[in-house]
Amino acid sequence: MTYDETEPVHPDGLSIRRRRHDRGWSTRDLVDAIGDACERATGIRETITPNLLKSVEEQCEPIPYATLCLVADGLGCDPVDLLPSEIESMEESLTH
Image (cartoon, rainbow, N blue to C red):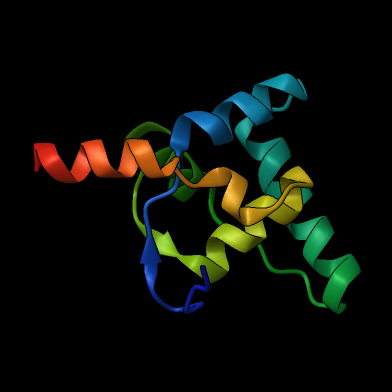
């Protein structure tokens, strides 16, 4: 499956939070790690705000796929790992 970097995706906020907690990181630590990873990859420091990260973790706030890629880079994982499984997505679409 391919994603348009500007199209919103609904990340698995609990997965993001779990990965952050597994590293013993605060929200601010992950925001800094995102900036560090982006700077290493591109030479430009780009990150997200702590408030956006909290919204993503707590409410699965839709974000552009490009933003999900930033979060994944900060966590050192594949962006697809931060999306709900197909089964969860199907269940969610049935309840809405």
